[in-house]
Amino acid sequence: MAEHTPRLDHVGLTVADLGSAQAWYSAAFGFVTELTARVDAVGLDVVMLVHPGRGDRLELLHRAGSARGPRAADPAAAALVEGYGHVAFDVRDLEETFDRLVALGARPVMAPQPSPEPGVRMAFVADPEGNLVELLDRSGGPA
Image 1 (cartoon, rainbow, N blue to C red):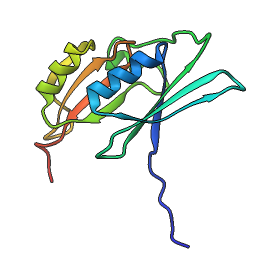
Image 2 (image 1 turned 90 degrees about the horizontal axis):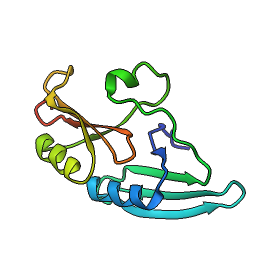
Image 3 (image 1 turned 180 degrees about the vertical axis):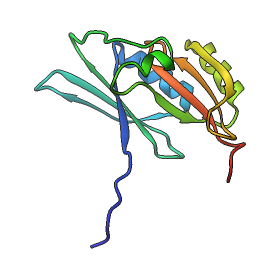
C-alpha cells in the first residue's frame, strides 16, 4: 500500500449569511460550488467551494441560531487570541487583487507591503462579515 502524506483538504468558515458568503468568495477568488448539503440532525447548512484550477477548497457553514464570535480588527489583534485567526490566499497581482476585493465589499486592513518573509509581499482585508483574509504575492521570492 502506498504511503499517504496528509495535506490540508479545506478550511471551514462559519458565516451568518451563507448565500452572500458563497457569492463573495466565488467572485473574490474564483471558487465554484462543489457541494451543497444539509445535516438535518443539527440544522447545519454546508456549501463546499472549490477552485477549479487549483483544487483548494473552502467550506462555508451556517447554522440557525449561530452567534457572531470575536473578530479581530487586524492581524496583530488576531494574534492575541488563540485559535484560527485568518485564511491566506496566494495571489499574483497583490495591488490589483487588494483593490478588487475592496471594491467587492472587503474592508481594507493592511495595504500591500513587504512581508517579513524575504521576497514576499502581503496585504490584509476583512471579508464582508469581518473575517481576516491575508493576500500573499510570492512571485518575487526564491523559486
